[in-house]
Length: 401
Image 1 (tube, rainbow, N blue to C red):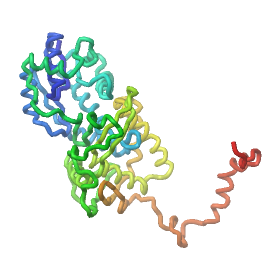
Image 2 (tube, rainbow, N blue to C red; image 1 turned 90 degrees about the vertical axis):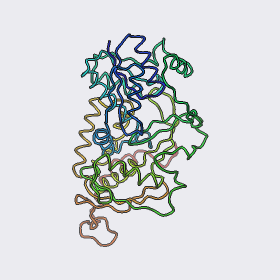
Image 3 (spheres, rainbow, N blue to C red; image 1 turned 180 degrees about the vertical axis):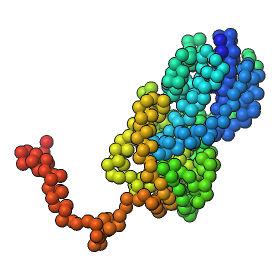
Image 4 (tube, rainbow, N blue to C red; image 1 turned 30 degrees about the horizontal axis):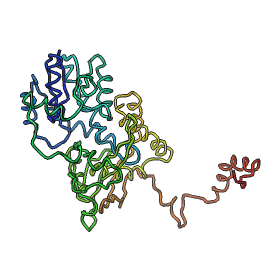
């Protein structure tokens, strides 16, 4: 039997690698995805081989991650439950997609992951597997009856197999970093009445520690995709890195949220998403002057469903792809330049410019304009409100319910 394992080099997946090899007498191919986390990938590869992997794939997915996942989410203004910009949710399907591609290339029998049975990631991995390669067996050790039940059991097993365990202080939080964001869960954050500890931040600073003067930054978009920052055209990866640096040092993009997991559990997390917060707020501002009213309002409804499907692990669902086609169509006119003012966590629109702008000062001005006859409003309001007027004649709406 041949199994491709999504491998990080941490305690869990290191133990899982050895455990799979023992249980199934299988050949284990370890697969490591680089989505922008700061890791020593050579060390991880060496550790996987020493732990028993027959082969190790280290895949640099950063460019594809930004182009095909992050930037499309910006076009969609994809936000789950008001605040969460889907940093982990977007990373999982691209990781699982490449895992499937490796499994098919290696003619593997199964794919495996180290996600637990309580979170969302198990769904994101497994729905991707089932969508792209339904014939592959899915192995999720944490949901197996004969797998370990506690962290101490994993440590003892690792010691028995000679798997190195880093001798470090216990992390106060569970973190998940990538090029788009970093999440913090667990520890003191499990009590929602506790304020977060600002010393944990890695991508930027807490707003109270940001500079005392505002910083201005200009973002240029073409068809809803960011192309330039402060006039500099950059590759997608470098553009996001630059946005992270600028927004991070100004305390932008910190979110403290209690979210509803797909499995029904409420979970408290703190997220740093500096660059994408900056880019998405600029994108929203550009849409306000380039999208026609009905299209913009309908897109806002689509955005909620789009974000929910990403969070639920339904990235390769045909409905999400269909929604993306609608979103892509709307973005044909979303080109222009937005200047943002960043100040102590705030991300404020300073200037909007676009050749496709629908803003007409002759229509909107409070002074005398040439394009609008106010007398037209009389008949319009009468007809628009006619159903309400008819209902009001029949029913006395002044009475309390």
